[in-house]
Amino acid sequence: MKYEATIGLEVHVQVKTKSKMFSPCEYRYGESPNSLTDPTVLALPGTLPTINAEAVRQAVKAGMIFGCKIADISKWDRKNYFYPDCPKNYQISQNDSPLCRGGNVEIELEGPSRNVMGEHRSVKLNRIHLEEDVGKLTHCEDESLVDYNRAGVPLIEIVSEPDMHSAAEAFAYLNSLRMHLIYANICDCDMEKGQMRCDANVSVRPMGKKELGTKVELKNLNSISGVKHGIEYEIRRQQDILESGGVIYQETRRWNAETCVTTLMRTKETAYDYRYFTDPDLMPVKISDEIKVNIQSELPEMPFAKQERFYWMYNLPYTVTSVLCPEKILSNYFEAAVKFHNSPRTIANFIANDLLRAAGSAPLESACEKINPQCLAELAKLVDDVTISKQAAKEVFGEMYATGEPAEAIVEKHGLRQNTNSDELKGICKSVICDNPKAVNEFLAGKDQAINALKGQVIKVTQGKANPQLVDKIMRELLSL
Image 1 (tube, rainbow, N blue to C red):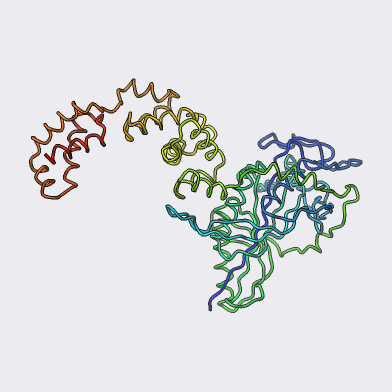
Image 2 (spheres, rainbow, N blue to C red; image 1 turned 180 degrees about the vertical axis):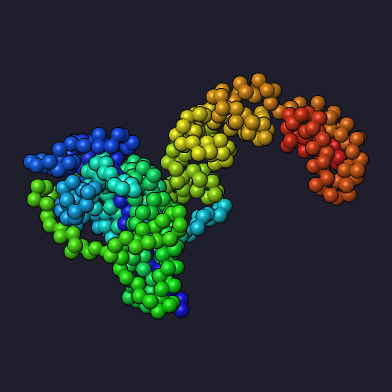
């Protein structure tokens, strides 16, 4: 029997703000445990929450990016549970009146070919709501430790509909979410730092059956690839159970990245278990039309739209735009360089190939600082003016990246200018023709590629400084006499 998987994702994203969601306490990743707390975060008696307005704006901005309906009024609820990571024994969240409803996330299922974008589709969203984060628990052999630095940090929870049907779609969805949120400066989405976390709801049903299968929630998915692998495993596990006549139970399972299996954590809670009720200490939030218009005006051009523009405006193939556009810093760097020298393809190829190769695992910000856009444009101009060869340009780029020297200085220092003296090259070509009668006869007999051997000899004699296009022109003229 064939089966169909149905997948929904719940993604928690830390909003970039200076202070926490309901207190003025600061938050920074990597500080000493429990050094970023205050009486409100620790739920000391008599403390009251105050709303972080910037976090609300960022949540609304996320909703606008994904085409959600922004609520005119939304309220706060208490989600009750008893666990050491939550000092209050409840989390302030939004249950039945979220800031954002509906919407969709555009995803790219397949990579682009040279001139055609990959297959795109939209994944439906259920909602985006705002809440506070909880502390971080570290489980040791004989004890568990809790760090409340993260407690109270603003989170948006992005809840999709069960609208994905493969691990590949879930992988594409998370990549798209991350890309859009970084573009809008809502979050850096570093999963290693806990800035973006994902739970996956997976069910399997016989192909063609309308009713969804029993949902299993996956936790401890600590990377985008981990989400993909965890879902792949869980789909196989559920299919095997159904094939053997077994029953799938609604439960929460933990993904183990080392053993690549899921294991039972607990039976799944329902909304009733959390006993939601309206928080009595917080007033509802009203989002005026004026605020919506202001936030809308802050939205940047989104990556898929930018990719389409780069294709038409700069005549760049999709294989290149798919490298430049997902990373905002690269696309901005590219457009800054083009302003200094209008050669989009040459500049784009330097970025997509040489810059990324040189950067390796280094942050893109530091890589782009090694060679500023104007210096890159100057190197591109040397190539376009045929002052240096493309091969020499790669050497120049490497030295620019390592030393910070300008391209012109490196070219002069190493004598890399191409020889464009027609009379001198003509003499060398005549000499090569005399010394290579076999290649000459093959060319004259109709074997056009035989001329490459002759040109190669000229390049060798000139130590790579002869202009290849000029050599080709001179060689063909001489052979046609």
